[in-house]
Amino acid sequence: MMSRWWRYSAIMALLSLAVGCAGPAINPTAVPPTVTPCPNCGTISGRILLPPRDAAVLDGPAVHLHFENTTTEEISVTTLKPGQSQFTVALPEGTYCTYAWLSDLSLRGAHAFCEPGDECSDPPPRTLVVTAGETIGGVDIDKWAAPEGLPLVLIGTLIDGTGAQPLQDTALVILEDRIVSVGPRKDLAVPPEAEVIELPDATILPGFINAHVHNAYQGRNLAIWAREGVTTVRDLGERLGFPYFATRDRLQTDPRRASLIAAGPLVTVPNGYPIAGNNFPSLTVTSKDDARQKINQLIDDGADVIKITLTSGGAPTLSADEAAAIVQTAHQRGIPVSAHATSARDVNRALEAGVDDIAHLATDHVPDALIQRMVETATSWVPTLEALEGRGSANLRRFVEAGGRVALGNDSGYLQDLEIGMPMRELNWMQEAGMTPMQIIVAATHNAAYVCRRAGTVGTLEAGKFADILVVDGDPLQNLEALSSVRLVIHRGVIIRTEEVAQ
Image (cartoon, one colour):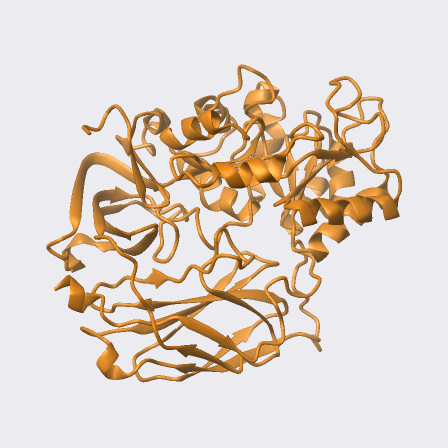
């Protein structure tokens, strides 16, 4: 059964593309214009060459195309059924990472392609970048060898990370490192070779993402995060001179360690924060040109994100021109920028520079107009309430009420007593600030993935995404403390069995 089931094959071969994966210069925080004419609006049209019908087993495959705009959160999806070979998708202005997979219709699943070396996601499916208004010359699908291994099926109550209500009696199917199907148990045809894990009285969630940590370049710390269900972390600053990116790459060979997104050093000015006061060696810039050169070099070295400091505390800080030059340079390379900002003045400067997210809450009052600007510019907030001991909670409450995007981050590693692993103190502070358990879960999954530029591969439980999964005893919507009762963690398809699960 299994040999026939996986017999059909296809690999994406990309033809006649005018744009490489790095794409043209873009501003990831830009809002698509509503005025016309729009210089880069239109449709993407193209041609899919399906494999011969005799290459398919059962009812498939269908081809799913995702067009993910790197400037917004929106993903538009089109599906080509067997025998269909033409497609046209209307897209707003922007540059898109596009990826595809085959779907075995009888399994209601999908198998994402993974092409090492592409730059659109972490690691990406087989991708291409297109620009609205251009034409894809063709996408050939010829030989697909299914991954080795047997499916793993989790059955229980599922919270998918999107904010949707929990799904009862749901089956989630994993093959190798990917989720291939999510749906009602009654609709699933389970292959006899599959391993099925029933999870009564438990909740299945996406692996959590901590979007603000430090001290992550240690295998021990990454293993602690992973075992407690935090399967991705974003390190927002290590001392200047540390081999950040080589260490990151070396540590990522073991799936029992959390995935690491690395900023490298903090970027400031001579004698600015955190050099002044904290004696923390950082990358310094002295002019707009110097900023551009050093940010380009940092990205060439392997930075996933740029972290700038805008808090002065009486020390020198980046000028408006220097901050804007850093953001523009990073955005031209497709790299987001996070800003250390702890006052309303800092937040205003961060918005003027065009950063993507703000690390830390402002601890003084943030005017309503400034909060509205954050919402309108889609600037995310990573609160770090644990590090701030709850200061700024009123600002967070108003930001959430205004519809702002919040992502989990507790500044772990900055101070010795900040939690490594599941950051329950941060989660509890978020609840005290007025966030509901569902809003907190979304902040720790979908929203954090968006902030980390990984929304195409992690953060929600959907077919085609990485199998980064957290299972906890109980219902975290009724009792947030359930998130500390970890029953099972899966990272990149590898099961990490905690003490509560028999080996």
